[in-house]
Length: 293
Length: 309
Image (cartoon, rainbow over all chains, first blue to last red):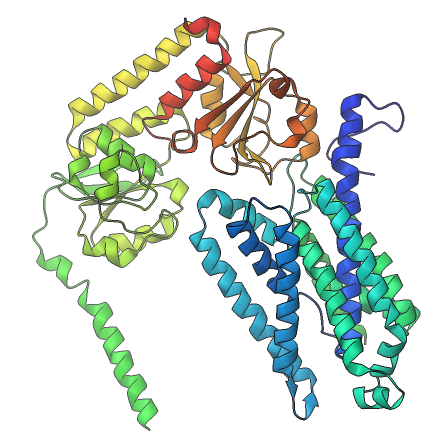
């Protein structure tokens, strides 16, 4: 376990123990929870919407959660629990908005979905920019840093919450894996096989919103995890969601833990925002994947 | 066709607007000017008699009032809240995004800029409109005194500027003599009297002061030594692991709503255990202006109460 401070393997002083148990381990654990949540949300949304580009960040779900958190930050800063609740609400509303816009009488096509995601994302970004301009300078600094993804604010409460959300979301989405496999062929075909399409949709959207809301409330917007991880996993294990969902959770956790290790150590004792690292790794990797296929 | 015509009309209109401005300046009588070198090393030609001043930094506003030229300020930023009279002056936007049109419309003889405001990009626009821009970049308390004297020189209030600078210098000398020759630079020697302190700019995420901040020097002149003085950049986000292991003996908080208490990582530090925590008004602490000596005095008295009886 690397970190800004070098720690011996055995016989820690009380202070070193405090660094390890109060700061480093909660942060590593939070990174794992956030990574798992985002990757599972990405895997679920991609299968449900039959769209390889469906990702919490691109669909505006992350921005919905970010706006919810910002409002909680602004209006209910005295209640710590307001942040995750508002983030979940924001993520849910953004998901519903994108879905409603993308769905037409003829069904849903790829272009409409991506376009709706872009519209919701940019609209929510401008609302966020407007609000941060109105906030005073001291609050602004912590918020803009947080927008880029920042795991340094790992509190034990936040860690438990993210852990709970990651587990629940993974179980929810994994429970629909068989139905999602059928829906990848087409919603109508799936319905013929006895899949309750609207129920699956509700559970997957709910699970993804929970996962994204909890991770955004704890660590801001960490991009590319939900996009890149399920794609890599599908290249390895194939497209059976019964494998893709759990393996995405594990790989997402590993990816964000590694990215955060880079963020914590490269310019120590200073720190980089983890969202910048995941994007820096994720974007070229995604281009490489696109060219390979 | 209609659209094309509309675009042409629009273009002509825009061109007409941008052309109309520069034609004004050659017509006005060129007043007598003097040349000054600002803190960026630029030669700035400023009218001899300055009647209208715009300040784009709270520290510059405080300096203008300190040298007794506050009644000539015609524009300040929304951050300029000291002295109280500054609140009555017209606002030209905040330090980061001042409104160029408002500034030009105010017809100032000089615009005072601090590099902290990152306004160098705009100097070109202002200078094209015949407005002198004087840039200040104080990185040390000595620079603050120098800036006060230059402002006095530019604004024609040399005597009062010198009086203010001398008074601030006297107060700094008083701190120095009270501390009795404590070193103001270099690494900590065994028991040289200096106190290891952490300056907390923001509690969450944890921001502090680094090598590039003038506050590292203010702290040093007040009988302290910043435990993050060697960290690159001026206001770094610091690793909590490092912050915990630094174990400061005192903590200074830049006082704001979110920064009233030390971060939890300091719970077991000597500073928190012994209650050695000081809140300093964020405006006083963050502005390289005349009140920086106030901050220095507060910190020195807090660190060495026995030496100021």
